[in-house]
Every structure is written in C-alpha cells, then in structure tokens.
Amino acid sequence: MVAVADYMTVSEAAQELGVTVRAIHKRIASGHMRAERYGERAVLIPTEEVQRWRELGRMKPGPKRASE
Image (cartoon, rainbow, N blue to C red; front, side, top):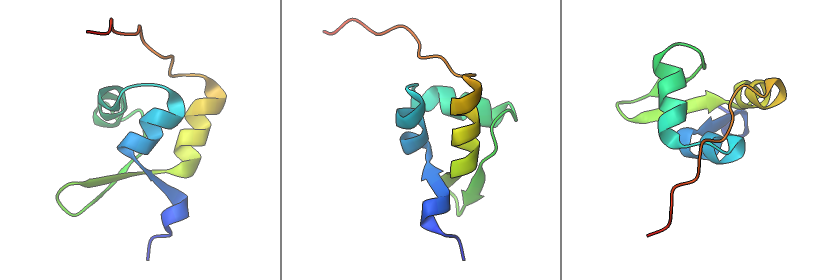
C-alpha cells in the first residue's frame, strides 16, 4: 500500500517547485525525475524526490506570462 504522505501529484510538485506541470512532465519523460505511474493516468512523485530537486535548486521558475 502506498502512503499518500510519501507522494505528490505532478500538480503539487510543480506548485512546490514553482514551475509548470509541463516542466515536471518533461523531467519525468527525460528520466531526470523519478515518478511512479498508478493505473493509466495517475503519476505520483516521491516526496523525497521533490525535496531533492528543491535542495539542489535544479529547477528555476521560468518567465511569467503576461496577463490577458
């Protein structure tokens, strides 16, 4: 059984790191960020992986889009 507190959704990880969901998906697809797939759609990222990226400062927030 997976402990919910041990994982984050892609959206939660993106918010925690201050980047877009797309940026997280790109890191997962390239193999740079660990993630686990549950079922067909659920992708969960270990909390320690998000913490590791935060500590390393490897993901920098991108430029802000102009509001419309």
